[in-house]
Each structure stands twice: as structure tokens, then as C-alpha cells.
Image 1 (tube, rainbow, N blue to C red):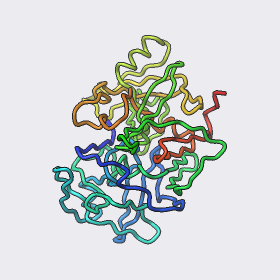
Image 2: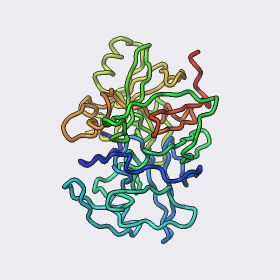
Image 3: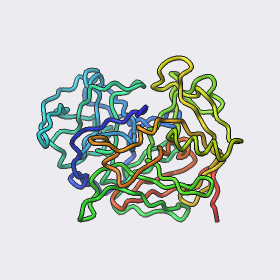
Image 4: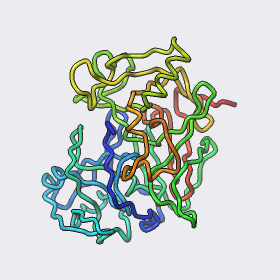
Length: 336
């Protein structure tokens, strides 16, 4: 995928890393053009920069560190073998008091993070993804630009609407991965998408028509849609705006960027939001095949719903109960 998604052949049951804290904790984080970056401070004074990406990789309670990030932070590593797969993991993480991440228990090889040699398009040390986040309850307060790990007895407030999340489960009902499917409605029709707080945009000059807020290096947030679905929308609604060469993240050269399409509005969790711009991605990026991350979802998806939608909300993802709760801040309205 043309986003920061790291997949591994090993995907342990997320139940092996359950929540171990009972109180609400604010996660040290910065908010940059729609993305949350966790920023824990290590004992050696180094501040990590970790994209909080519900569509990103990991497994069994691990978060992901990029090799360059491990080097910058002067961390040590060691080998770890899980299900006959040899991996490199961070040996330990020591945080300054009150400036760390909520810890996970029972991670493979008793390691906090797994290391990948893949390099991100944006400057960061790693990501908190589908390995680390599940088993817990997280609030992405986009209007307040704050990130919380909620207490295990968290309850939704009256201003929140519930959306059921599809998650792959075993015969006992235990989630087998942390990738979540969220359903929306576009043009009155259901559309299943990956819940993806890390979906990343890098708009071209043409793509800036979408009004995407970007960082100094040009990165922002978006939602993704497959080529085939974009073509269907364009054929059925020729008046919907389409921008050629609108995003160059992962493009093959000048003028060869992805198309954008503007959907006038969509409905998520009973909230009407719009307009929403989607960035084109090849069908193959969202087609399950042996060994890829889509085999760890409970059904097919036609793209990903990103923070260009979530930024309108205070959103709580309740992984243990397979639900997301959204409270509207601005730019959204109830459907009834």
C-alpha cells in the first residue's frame, strides 16, 4: 500500500496482549496535519516519533520500529523467533517517568517492538499499529488534538454514535488481528473500508484543490478508494469532481500521480459528512492474496477511511468490544 503499513508473516492473536491498566492515560503526542504521533521520551532523552496508525502493522502487542529509528534512539536489538519466522526486536525500552507509552503485557520474546528495514515516506521512528493498539480502548480527540488510552471500564457519552467494527475472529470469538473494517454509506449504498487513521496524502499542485492540510514536507491525511470503485462513481456521477495527478505518494514520476475524486457526502455511524476527497489506489492494494495483510480482515474492503473524515470527530475505538464511537465537533450532522 502507498501508506505506512507494515505487515509480517506472523500475526498472533491479539488477545495475547490484553490491557493491563485500569485508569485513563493521556498519551504524549503531537498532532500534525491530521496525524497523531506518539512522542514518548526515553531515559536517554531521545523523543520517539511514532505514527498512530490503526491500519499499520505489528502483531501480538508489538509496535513497529524502523531500523533508522532504532539507530537514532541508540536502542539495542536481538533476534526473536515466532512460528519459525526469525525477526529482530527491540531489547527493551526505558522511559522517563510519566513520559512513556502505556505498556503491553505478554508480548512475544518479552520485547516491546519489532523492527523493520522498510523506510517510511515521512520522517518518523516507527508506528503504533494493529499489533499494539488492539485489546485496549483509545480516544482520538481530533478537535482537542489529544490522544488517550481509556480505562477498561470506559463508557460512551450521550453525544456519541456507535459503529460496529468488523474484525477477524477465531471460533471462540477472540480477535485474530487488529485490522478493523468500518462500513459507511456513499450515494445511499454501503461501502466497507479499512479503519485507517494513518492513511497518508502527499498532494501535488493539482491535488491542493482538495484543501488538504499538510506539514512543511507536504504530508497530510486522506481516504483511499480502489480504481474500480472510483471508475464506478465517475461513471454514475460524472459531475463529481475528479483530479488527475492529484497525489504523488508512491507515484512513478512527474504527471503519474494518483487521481482524486470528491464524494459530496458520506454517512458514518449515523453522521453525514462531506464533501470527502478520496485518493485512488490500485485494486491490488486492497485484494486479499496469500501472505498479505488483507487475509487478516474479516471481509473485503474497497479502500480505507482516513482522518480527513475522522478530524470532524472525537472518536473512541473500543477494540475489546469491536466498536467505534464518534461524537461530532464540526462539519457533520446527524442523519436523523
